[in-house]
Length: 234
Image (cartoon, rainbow, N blue to C red; front, side, top):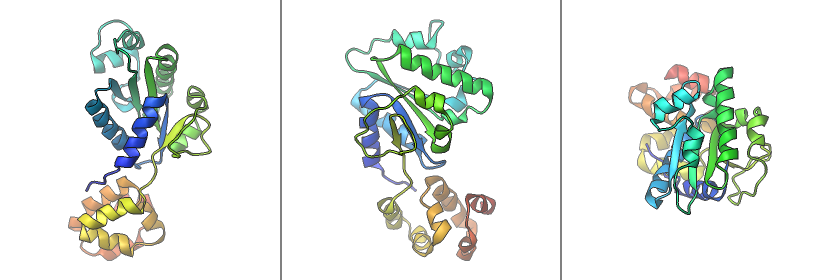
């Protein structure tokens, strides 16, 4: 199952090239996927970028960064600042800020972002992805990105900084699935209420796709009202 969100990724590309900012969206909505597609575009365009995933960086201490990235020197941010990028800015993508669950990791991740914003300004744009709920509960993170113009229209009025929203799937996205899978098309057409809303989240669609070969009776899906119920069925 694949949904082509080319317009969304093109808007995201424009967003990260223009300035630093925060990428927000609900859980399972496809933030990491969109950033991965963005990386493919940046590769094709010859733009320097570095993709960091918080959940692979331990406590996000200097030793963790060096072990993951294998850079020379004693300081990660200083190493990036010293990188020769010619005339074009690089893009530093930090994915999954909300994955920093303990206090030490959160503190280290925030300090990494703070230093990147301060010391790489004018040379690297810094982009951080975070779930919308966690963004609203992280004023220190949002303060680092200030206010800024966003031309894409993909914004959330409750987030007071330069940001870009990865939305749930729209009707055109779902129509792509209808064209490729008759069984999914039948489920999408018959779904109502809460279950229909669930199917606008890519992660829930992935669960459903995995369920279908062994599901047998599709009537079981009529009882689904929440992600928890869908996970239990999975």
